Length: 205
Image (tube, rainbow, N blue to C red; front, side, top):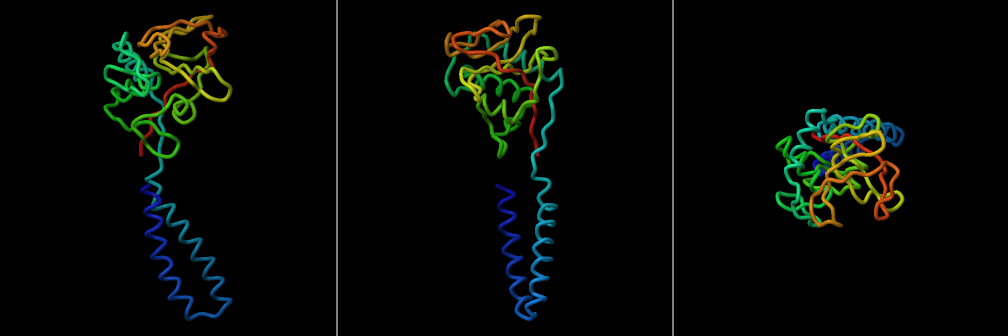
């Protein structure tokens, strides 16, 4: 929003100046000036708004473990669709709440457009995590689960990755509370399967 507002203001000034200048010039000079001015406007606008672009930083092992510890403190809390703390959660809400409390900041995740104070599990997968494998996943990383192709429908935070299975905490709609699960990597559980794992990316301007 800040970027678009800045562009609109700068564009209005640009149009006024261009109108005054073109009025006194020949057609050939007008074309050349128009091209140069447009390029200059675009370049300068990029420089002006560079500070508004989101930067994403991968969280450390320590920060991931801190988020996991916070999630574990919510064992048996009530499952609530759309819940994101402090006593009721859905699957993404538990993850988001845990990391927000590590950084004491509600705006560390993005929906792909801007910083927001809540995201879905699919948005965590698409915009807020770097891929991990079962061989390098660490405590506090996200486990991504699905019951349909090309869309993440569930998730949690990894507690321990074993040779054939992974233990994780999640807000379960099936059990209607926050629980600890352990699934085999290739297991089908109630029509769901493990898609992969991710290390959280913290967003900031």
